[in-house]
Amino acid sequence: MSNDVSVAPEWVSKQVDVSDNTTSVYSGACLVRMAKVTVVLSAHVCPIYDGAAAATTLMGTLAASAAVGTTEDFGDVRFENGIYVDPNDSGTGTFWISYSPI
Image: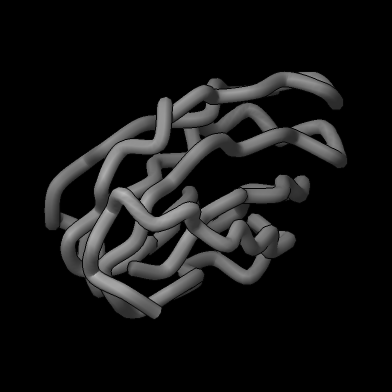
């Protein structure tokens, strides 16, 4: 994959199961387009980080109790160190996240 962002990116979608607690979605530089809830989220905020662990750069969140179809638009923002999701330990629900490795 080219590091030249002028090249049309190839988009990948991955389902994230919030009940897995922490998830490393992708471990490298990428563009993130959006996240979309596919199974209603529990009453916990679901943070999405640029990094390989929590306490790195918070890039966005999915709201507590987000309904199916709720989206978080990242606008093709560049994540330098990967995509990491760290919901509450008792969180439930799923969402798709769309990204393009660069």
